[in-house]
Length: 362
Image (tube, rainbow, N blue to C red):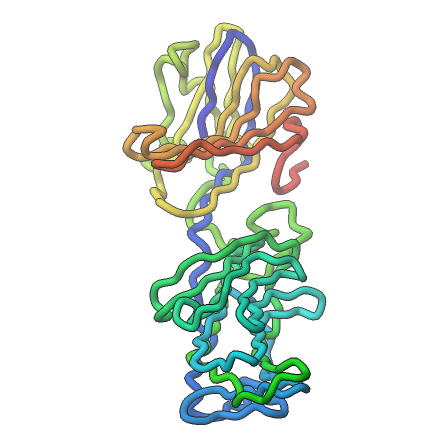
């Protein structure tokens, strides 16, 4: 968290929590099926399905053949090996919750990746390059992968989801179109399903962590302890302000009643604090901030800063409210990420900065 004084004005910044959530929830392997036996507890077996020579066999009949999981899962990833696939067979591998689906679809010489009828990926089928297929879900994002060996994966397409893949049935099916001769069926192997240990997503939550199921935080503070800034994990800055403008002082920073309050006066004196308790290369960060009405010349900023101190080469992520003119009742919130060796990217969203973002607070 950092507040930057740009001009001689006054403002108050209140923060009710700053929380670090770890990398995407750890994968929990639900099962790995090499089809040495016909598992009737895990799968519901339809007509034309069988196990032979350590492979799942799906007959490519006109009526189709399908196996589907008997249990619904909170999906993280689903992958399998296409061991044999005659040219006339149509193959589908999917995750479905009754209203939405994610699907690998192979028909003729074309391989597709779909989400709810929207094409995400298309390529000419290669029995070598596309021998292994996988799709993975991370919150509200899905990525399609292919591999030659099931170890090194190539991302083929990604898209966002407008639904939660937290209770889906996994299925594998084959069929053929009328006029095409039966070709011996599809042979699949090494089906692996991973789920997550995160709690079920709550789309009605006002917090990103609750909405997208990030799980329990790894570090952070709710500022319930007035002496928290005296701990080794926090640093209160003293000295010249950003670009030499104004002065940063610990006297402008206060923790009281579950709030971290940073003030700025008309002389350009303000404050800044930094949290050093959880250095991470990857993760998700969330903070709840309110900026009461005041002169818009001040520039409140919440940022992630590289431990090397070298930017933009080593990256930086900044969320800020630009210096709008008063009253600061309906400001813009801009997030800019500078990734090492990559061009700057960012986004802008409209919102009311005078209200708490994230969890509501009275």
